[in-house]
Amino acid sequence: MNKKNSVFIATSLDGYIADKNGGIDWLHSIPNPNNNDLGYVEFTKNIDALVMGRTTFETVCGFDIDWPYKKPVFVLSNTLNEMPESYKGKAFLVKGSLHEILEQIHHKGYYRLYIDGGATIQSFLKEDLIDEMLITIIPIVLGGGYPLFSELSKELEFELIESKIFLNQMNQNHYKRKDR
Ligand SMILES: NC(=O)c1ccc[n+]([C@@H]2O[C@H](COP(=O)([O-])OP(=O)(O)OC[C@H]3O[C@@H](n4cnc5c(N)ncnc54)[C@H](OP(=O)(O)O)[C@@H]3O)[C@@H](O)[C@H]2O)c1
Image 1 (tube, rainbow, N blue to C red):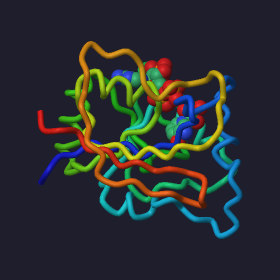
Image 2: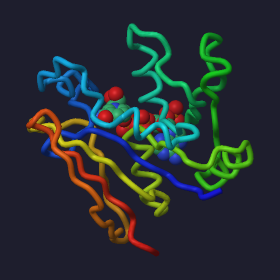
Image 3: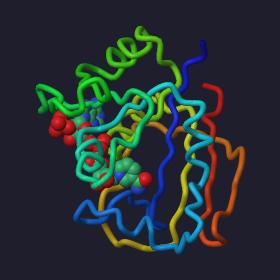
Image 4: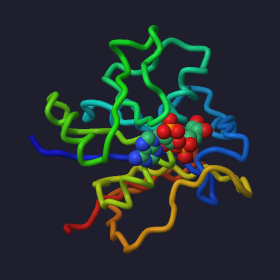
C-alpha cells in the first residue's frame, strides 16, 4: 500500500489558518448558500486516517456538533495523558518522533493520512514528510494569527497539479511534492 501524507486546509491571503485569537469564523466569510464542501468529501474518500495537533483537536471538540470524522483521528500531544472518555474509540493519543508515530499508524493499517493543524503540518514539512497539499485561499488579509508555514532548513519543491475556483471567490491549489 502506498504511503501518503496529505494536507487539506484553508488559509487567508497572508497565509494564516486561524486569526490572532485562534478564531476560524472568517473561513465562512464567503456566502455559501448551497453548502459547497469545496472538495472535502472527495478528498476524504482517499484518506485512511487523520493526524491532528492537540490545538486543532480541542478546537473541533469545542464545536457544537457531533464528532465530524468517520475515520480514526490520531492526536499529537505531549501534554494530554489520556483521551477524554467521550472520544475514546474515535480519537487516539500518539506520542514520540514523527517517524515513530507514522510507524505506529502504518502498523495499524492506515497509510493515506490527512495531516491537520498548523504546528503539526510545519513539523511534518521540517522532515519533508508531506506529499501533497490542497490549499484553499480565502480572500481576506488577517494581519496575524496562526501561520500555515514556518522556517525550514531547506527548500521543498512542489508542482501544481490542479487549480480550481470555488464560489467565484476562493482559489484551491493542489500541489504535489516533486520526486525527492
Ligand atoms: N484554516 C484551516 O483550515 C484550519 C485547519 C486546522 C486547524 N485550524 C486552526 O489552527 C489552529 C491550531 O493550529 P496550531 O498551529 O496550534 O497547531 P496544531 O498542530 O493543531 O496543534 C499543535 C499542538 O500539537 C501538539 N504536538 C505534539 N507533537 C507535535 C509535533 N511533532 N508537531 C507539532 N505539534 C505537536 C502540541 O500539543 P501539546 O502542547 O499538547 O504537546 C502542539 O502544541 C486552531 O485555531 C485551529 O482551529 C485551521
